[in-house]
Length: 285
Image (cartoon, rainbow, N blue to C red; front, side, top):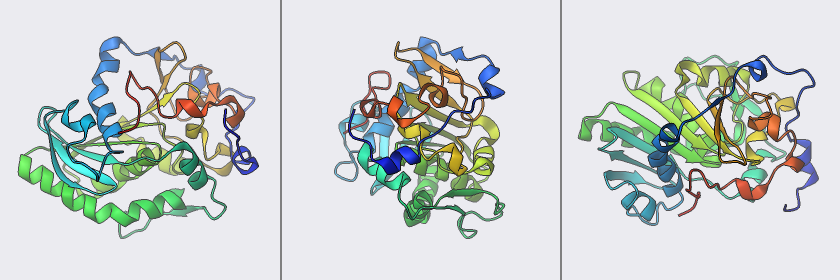
């Protein structure tokens, strides 16, 4: 495993000596059909690494031929007519860059901008670095999503991303419904770090529309640490070393079959697991 800076170790997650309520709940195994259902969205998350270089990137153009691009930057918006959904993909980053962001000495937990997130309680707080990155493109993405909904006559939006892209997608899952209340949303992300505090995790878990998939001993999902006030929302799926996909109920389930229990600190993680594979798909262009 690559050298891990001391500052990263200090921010790693810890496992409580007392098992959580959720750790005692049943861990369920996904069937092959359930795993396969994620694959189109896995390709879309990987395709985000290809934009804006090509809106005909292989991961979209070949794996998802029904995709119709609308706009792109270090993100993209388009419509998959076969899935009847607008797709919003946020570009991720490599492991060293995401570690730098989540361990930046200047980051803090802060309340969301009320102009972008009207009506939310100030008790809902998120990582300042993720919050600032999201704010750069929020209104532009909202406009592109509205165009897709109108132009193609669909009423569903799917948010995807890996690593930093997963964190931004989770913020979109809170932002966009505030401005498009009649639209159905689902969020499917991969290797996502923790984004906000418990109040944020509770809010993001409403409706159980979020799925965050973690691969084996990837340590990015245990950062920033719970000791700093961060929590994951519900909806974790953890891919075991055996290839079994386990659904982990609750927030930050400490069962050994779930990421928080399996990777109790960063030294137990493997940097190479961050990019996958996720059912055979690697997170690159």
